[in-house]
Length: 386
Image (cartoon, rainbow, N blue to C red; front, side, top):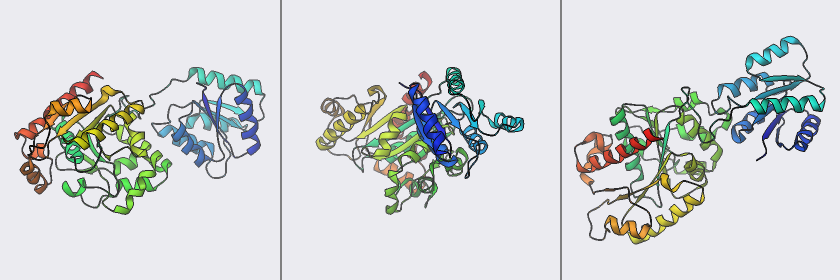
């Protein structure tokens, strides 16, 4: 696959000529005509090298470099400053803000090609899935979803997050990613959340680690909450797929575990997030129609190049009924193993809602709470083995 070079320059002739020259050398070329656009493309495309002009009207190359180096997602991308500024002080500033190399215009094509080739050869590729934290590790991402609403996705996500915190006393983020359909804020005593909505409404470039961290809400349990709004109009924000990808990267740098309530089905933002997850957990109930639709959901997820071994299915028997199939029957019809079964416990969840805390913390010895904790222990084993 051809290496990608992003050229950021407000001079159209430079974009065209340099781009054509490098394209002839076999590189894939992307272009941006100002600093802001360059930052956005760097985040979106993660190029192998950035060729950056210094003198641009909206944001000069120095400031672009500073921002790229502060962002964990782009901090390791090689930057070659390519500019008409020839003073020694200008070059020193370029290196001080984080440039890897510096060339002055005009330059011979052979010289430019040599510098590009040398930078690409020295570059160390970083992980493509998620942004790393300062200690070189990223949080363990767990996505929870179902084929339709009302199957217990939010309950499972919140109790898994609470179980992980209880077991490890580590940083755990419970992230609800369904704008306009939020329920966790009310259930856990943090109504009217705005963090996700504001980040989805803004520019992708503005979604910094600090801004995402400021959007987290501390819960009395010790977890951090990243919550979706309850305003039905906000559901249109699910179209902001690139913002979602950046948000998940930021969340992954802020905690050891990030448990995500992804809602129902496979909208575009979920299709983008699922391949980033270390584990994908699907909630199903023992009803023929739901089982068949869930089977299609799993097939669709596998078509997104998601490792089938990373997909777990939890059978949630929400109510006592003879119409519910046994887990062996569900497993046979689904064509996928059932990792765990949850027994009905309406009184447990009612009590948990009243005191605005997850069930595993309100009644940890309850049988259903113990089932949540067993799922948690399995996740911990896989997290340690990765």
